Amino acid sequence: MNETLTASTTKLQAKLLGSTTPVDSLAYVFFGCRRIWTFRVGPGHWDNTSNMFDVDWPAALVPNLAGVSGARLEIRTEPDQPASYTAEGTVDFGGSAEELKLVDSLTGSDLVVNKWGRLAPSFEAADEELKQNVLKSAHDLISYVKETLGLELFLTGGTLLGQVRDGKLISSDDDADLAYLSAHENPSDVVLESYAIERARAEHGLESVRHSSGHLQVMFGGSEYTDGFHV
Image (cartoon, rainbow, N blue to C red; front, side, top):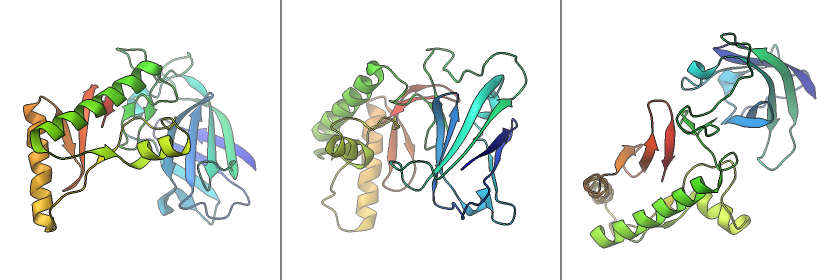
């Protein structure tokens, strides 16, 4: 079903007539022909009474919303399934009469909103260099952690899934996922081990962002609003 999409510099809206509640479905937002944001539909995005889809733009995207663009919203139950509902429209964010361009001002790379709500290049829009840099950084990190701490990192998550399923990196991804099996059984010891890994990375000059006791994101490049890439 195709409906009309509207947007301002703060939010995107679409009326999806006849839709069942799309909560937990995947929403894909496109500017022109390029996917710029994918997220899981939550209860706050959907009004059953009015059949209105309503979502605020990510904070990192807002400063870049200037100009005119064709826009499309697709609701899918699974990533590889066709869209259940589609809404399209031409959006004018003001500030410029030119077509909206979501690019890194320093490198010229096309950007998307990543899963952390920040702007970053993704494999689907990037040249081969980004993929090679991500893979090399993952390889170097595996070697360094083994040499310094004796821990064996291995591919996991979307990075492993892409290799097993498609024999390549998933196009909508933008990072490499690594994990290891700890020899510790006590959760406190596992946490201490994770912090030891973080300190070793810092000594190696690598910046880390900690998301939980056992989840570290190693950053490579980037700026205030834009991530380079991470492992």
